[in-house]
Image 1 (cartoon, helix red, strand yellow):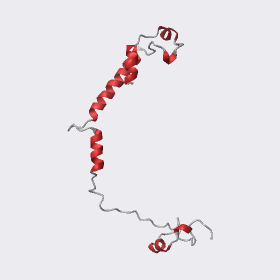
Image 2: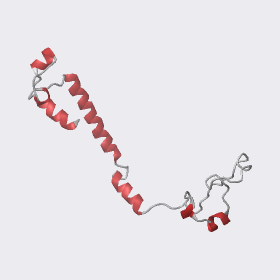
Image 3: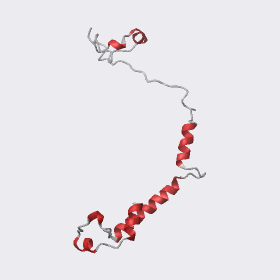
Image 4: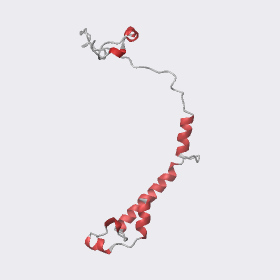
Length: 124
């Protein structure tokens, strides 16, 4: 929007476009096809973007990219000491079946150590 506003604000309005609604040159016309209302709307967008860009800087003067770089160089690991894993229990409806697939059967520690994972899904 900033570049469009810069280009269109300097141009003279296209008489053919504003009288008939069409111009044979289209976007290549050396005159402006933007009405004064559209140019005002572009000005509002550009000023709004400039204001939001200036508000991105934090109160202490550091820019957002500096804060992000600082965070990733020195991450905070205070609450990450203990990991709690969710427990998974087999449903009562599945307990009556004996030959369930490994993805549906109850997982016990001895199943994990004694398994042949590379053979899952292959018929012998």
